Image 1: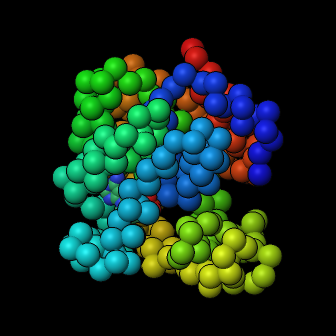
Image 2: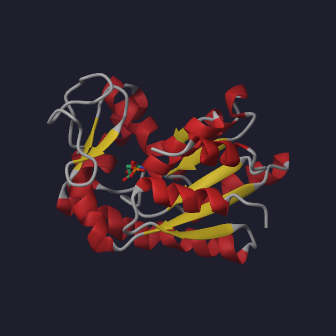
Image 3: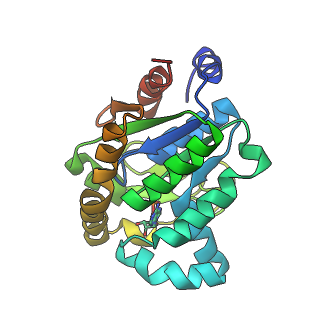
Length: 231
Ligand code: AMP
């Protein structure tokens, strides 16, 4: 999906914490996977962690399932704890990519404290996408329940209809990808998450806006890679 030279170029960047920011369906997951493949650092997606818990039927999954299915956000306390546990692991020592976190002011403040306390430099990459494009994208989205690979029946279909290219598993539509739930997720984003961008900007943190409406993932990745250049 991306060239080796671009990948090498991304690897040389000094930023350790990459925060991928954008509304649901902005392509954060796809860009995060490309970045983590190039950099060899963990992809920390709060949505994936929560869905894993629901799949395993553990205590956390049982506690969050209703909120997630309605498109509402899970409590700050729960997600802050999940993320801190992951970014404190040794495998995150050379860096990490955050996808879907922080989503509220309380989460952003907590993350900044954590990063500042360790002298870790971050860059917030805002993937900006038109909402009509997002609704079309999300209703066509399919995911492999085993390996997490994302497809889109319009723009990135699997080779065999309904099956994952990598492991043949039957692809699924996420519960929260129906149009009414998508609208609720976009509303939650506007209400709670968009102000987080203002927080980062006001705090003088590094925020780079990338237009991700119409370009294919490889072209967006090129722009994301440029966003990692030192100021
Ligand atoms: P995502 O896959 O990132 O779109 O997240 C799917 C759902 O997981 C969201 O609609 C929320 O219910 C929940 N979720 C994921 N990340 C967070 C977060 N940082 N804070 C609160 N809820 C979250």
